[in-house]
Length: 274
Image (tube, rainbow, N blue to C red; front, side, top):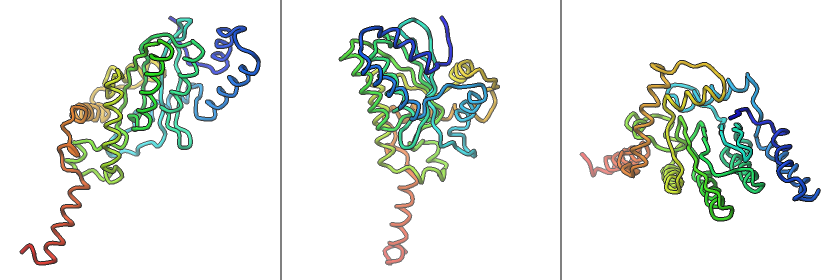
């Protein structure tokens, strides 16, 4: 089976061949517009240097003591109706997350009958937020109910987006100050929702890193690295969070500790505590 990084022009020609005379010129113009918009929203073809950049962004996402990237990539491997395997890399752009842009792109393939039933491999360096989870959930449901296409998504990530990890709460990590209880709950709910709809959610392990290395054609030694250590910790946190045992859910959050400290201080000042 042929595997290659998807070229926009190549895909466009493929879609036109599929459509042949089934659409008129006005529809073709609309299709061109859609492809242009996707390009503006961050879709790109990857050259060698860019592949290394994308891999480094994945590698540094969520590493404690490091500088986390503010760029999010979705690297997606899927099969077109001609049975050729293709890979696209979609990044966040302005206020649109990479998952949002990726779903829009995949939906166009679905509409044009170029996306057959399959398991889509989806690697993203931060887990989806609640809104992106809703977008993914809607896409899977739309494919099944409107087009009769059953799509499964195998999604892997090395970092959780705006979610309070139990291990971070135990260590009172400073980055938790930027994660509100509401964001935490909404994002966990979103992940549970798409998991219930058949999306396989996993933290990246050694096998996942091997797959990404192969897709992006980069070299990396994994075992014994800080990334390896972090992934083991993240996997434990993620399973605990998805099991529903976590409090905001179970552990006391940094926000809750500060609130309790403030309450005790006020009581002490008022003489209620001696």
